[in-house]
Length: 359
Image (cartoon, rainbow, N blue to C red; front, side, top):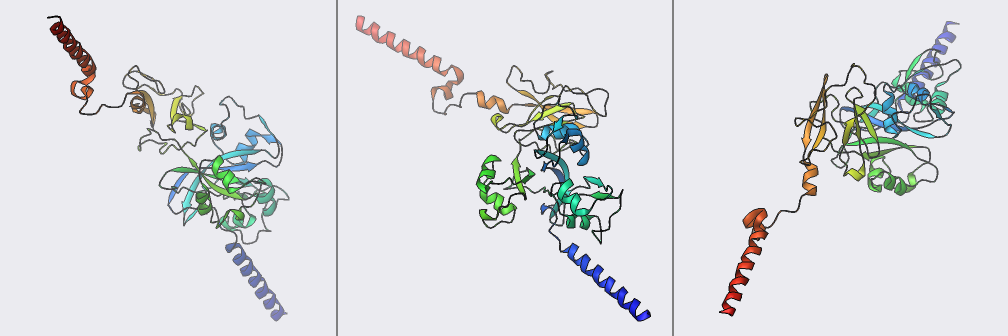
């Protein structure tokens, strides 16, 4: 009996070791991320059932509901109770952390195991195959994926990245590939190119694109005046979206039609964590988002504790001014009155000529 028990124990240990090896060699976690950083990312979620925006926000641990609205360009007046139909796609904003060349969501979302749940069901059905059951087991140190407990808290490692692309800051978007899509179509829709998509996703050619897979798509963001000392630096807002910041007091929008320059205004929503929004005035007395009589714009520059930073942005002025004159022109020699002097001299010359003829 002792020999049989020892053999059984040895067999169990071998099976456990094999299972652990399978988990370790499971599909790679996250997107490629060569930097050590944290940032904000977004990912598609195809809802398997009709639900509400509040339920989606809760499932993914989105702490600020306005982040969900901004990522999807929904009006700030949209209610959490709004119905979201099954099989529709919504973008989920979440914090990303990069370490050891891998980017995954930073300890969110956290899912509570329900009765009769299995890891594969959680990965495939609850989170619409954004991750695999092996990846969930790996980050939660679960040696046997078949042994999870009701009430157990599981970290769901969504793929993301914080890397720059072609030397520029971007927001990495986990795009769920729709059936019939092509690399060319996706690149054109999101303002990038095929080679970038292929390189980011480790594909050698466009035929490797698979419907339903999560593709790393870099989204171009608007430039801003946000100071490096600000608590929301860097404020990366992708084209066609908006973000509420500084206690929800400021709404910053990014539009390609605005030369990819972040445009911020008072949000006019109820502030969070403060009883009243801080002052948003520039030194000339104008409010964030307003253009002064001298064509400067009062721009949002970030926030520190309970103070909102502002700055006068003169970049819009240069686009409206005439090109500078060349140094050898009358305008260059005489300034803005050069053309008037030329007319006057021509008139005097003509007058003297006429006077000579009459004499």
